[in-house]
Length: 311
Image (cartoon, rainbow, N blue to C red):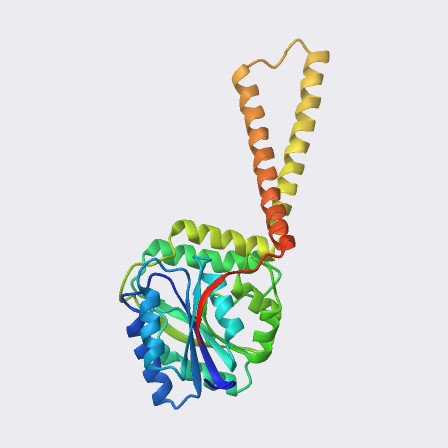
């Protein structure tokens, strides 16, 4: 195994037994045809099927260019990418999923943009095949919401398919926060950025591992990692409700003292109490999420645990 290569390709895999070999062969063909000096770092994110056996077979076929990392359990997509980036030795690192939705044929265009002077090259999706209108719509809203809420210029319509120069990789490797939104970290780092448009293909084998619940968790991690907007919204909501309550109290006192009319109605009172109570609980919960993330970072546990390496 070479100590230094030009391009490292990092790809996480979770329960991809059916398609990982197809992915490898498609990727390898592009790298060989284009005569790219390369290594391939494959990260098994705690798969429960025979993904690791398939990766071991690939390693035996191509021991000079393939490295395999196996997690002790499922730590998540972003941490699997983090591990691969940390292990990569290339002067530039290409990150891509192993389901072939992001075509390896785009990699030569990434490299040309990198050689032209861009330290970060994003794959920008011009079309998303095989995805429901709901997923497309939520993705569209998500990218623009993050860009509006965060104080960093996050590339819209771009997933975890990009090229990073070694300078960017070294900075990312120095970040130890646990709740990672890598696209946000890359945008925070800065440097010159380029984009390559491509058509995102439909998944060829298996099912997506990124369901609605994981999408929500991912979105929440992204927002809380790079924006205090939720806290400011809570503060603004509390201020508005306090102002309304203050004038309501004044109105109640006035009617009680200077008029014969008094406000009656148990239902309206309960609605007001429950509404204020709900806002308070929501606010406490949101603040608690930020505090919990601080606690996770302060503990400084390892980001992941590696069970086995095939070097």
